[in-house]
Every structure is written in C-alpha cells, then in structure tokens.
Figure 1 (tube, rainbow over the protein chains, first blue to last red):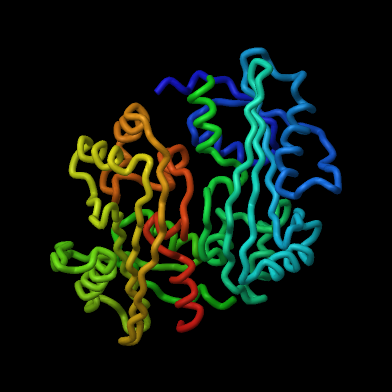
Figure 2: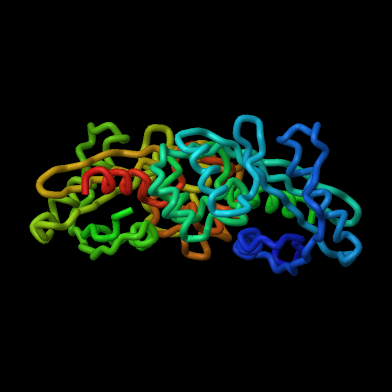
Length: 191
Length: 191
C-alpha cells in the first residue's frame, strides 16, 4: 500500500473535506479558491457541482506545483429539481429543513482532480430520506448553529443527521462533501 | 425539546454504541451483560440480533432502576444467508473481507428497549456494497488491528469504511451498531 507519498493541494475551505482527506491517510495543503459560485441558469442541476468544482480548479491552478494533485469539489442538495442553497440566516435554514421533512432529496458532489495536465472528474449521487421532523426538533438544531453554511442546511455527521435521517441510498461521505472512495480509487490507479 | 432528562442504562460494552448515545444527547450509565451469545440453530438469521439483544436485557434487568430505560443491542453481518462472525484472528478477518469484496451484504441490528415493564423492540437493516478490494488493501487494514472484535471484520467509521464501501442502502449508524434515529424516536414518543 504505497499511497502516502502523493502530494495533494486541496482547494477547499470546508473543514469536513479537509478532515476526510486527512483520515484517508494523505498529507495535503489547503488552497482557497476565490470564485463566484455562479452557473448558467439553463444548466441541468445535477451538472452544477462538477461545473463549480472545475471553476474552483481553474481559479487556483497557477498555484499548484508540478508534482501535486489538485483536488476541488462542490456539493449541492437537490429537492424537486431545485438546488437548496446554503441558508443565509436561521429562518431560512428552518424553512429549508421544513420543506425537506418526510421526503427524499439528492446530494450531489462534483469532484475535479488534476495532475500533470490530466483531469479526472466525476459526480457522485446519494439519496437521503428525512424522517417527518417536528418544528421543535428543527428549531433545536438550527439554534445550535450547525445548520449554517451547509448545503441544504444540515450536516449528516451532526446530531441532526443522527436523529433526522431515516436512511440513505448511496455513499455516506459523499453527503459530507467528498466521495472519498472514488478519490482514493483515482489516486490508487493514476498516482 | 425536552429529552435530556431521560435516564438510560446502556447494557453494551461497545465503545461505538456508547459514543452514539452520548452524541444523541443523553446521559447514561453502562452495564455489562454477561451472556453466552448462543441462539437456536434453526432460527432465521435476520431474527438473531433481536434474540441476542433480548438475552442481554434479561441478563441485566435486575440491576436497572425503576425510572431507567434499559437499552441493549446486537449487530450481525449477513452474507449468503450466513452470519459472518467476529474474527478470532487476523487471518480470519482477512478471509471474511476477501469473501465480502465486490459484493453486497446486510447488516442487522436488533434493539431491545425496556421501561416500566414495557418492551420496545425492533430490528433495522442496512445493505452495504463493498468495492472490489485488493489483498494489499485488506491486509493493510487488518494489520492496523481495527478489524478485530467487529461484526463482519470491519468498521464503517474506520479508514476501511471510507475506502472500501461504495454505497449503502439504509441507515449509516445502524452499521456502526445502533439505529439511533429509532432509539431517539422511541424515547421521544414514550419517555
């Protein structure tokens, strides 16, 4: 298992993604891509995360060393064919979670990996089924502050993920923000 | 959200279950059930975990205070209609994981909750899909020691779970050893 010598530049401010790459066993440095997360309005929502991951890659590419693997990612939550954005305030977080209560939504993470001018890009999809949630439970979670700055206003690894999610169909870590099994597989095959 | 005053006696030596109940937000004390984990050979394998959870409950019931909720659980991994037991040695762990490579298995956790002479019992099922795993990868994991003393010879929360599992269909925490959403729901409804 020769895998720890790969050099990675992870262009993501997400503490979850940083933790996942660390647990995977790789050393990495963090770059912070400065991009406006805009996408063409006519784009299929399922293609948006990969589009944004590529945008982030383009923004930092000049800072990446020749031997480094650049990794960027973007995660969105899709309900009724619409992207549920990160909540701007607690009220919006509550509204998002109420809308998702008792229903299935899809989490999509797009990943862009670049090395020696080659690109390895993919999207991973996980269906998440919320239990029917009381307003009390939703407010209790939102009040704790963990809903903010997260796609779809929740973290699967939070208390909310423990009590609010009945089941998932797909990869768990993809919901956290990075389908690590596929990142690992790509590095094993091509690094 | 009045839920933190419930008193729980968790009869389980599993550090994972203890951590999950803690994260759920409950205080608890730990009891250690001394039982031989035997079950009738003709029993359907999917019924075994709940049978064993009830056996554990019976073993400690006399130690539980009147106001306490007793919680016991048992988790098994089923492949080809057979229970994949906890490995007795690293060689067995390797053999288990090789057999499960590239295939789907089912994780069943049986939970027995008792309070005021009432029983709330259920089983939860999660299908887990392993990627095709190299002998190198399996050995690397087994060498680290984390495969031992775990149903099916792996922990979904381990490095192995990150790189080896493609997807699951069902609840994530159920694979860790406790379907916490159902424990929480039961306490919310009946405590």
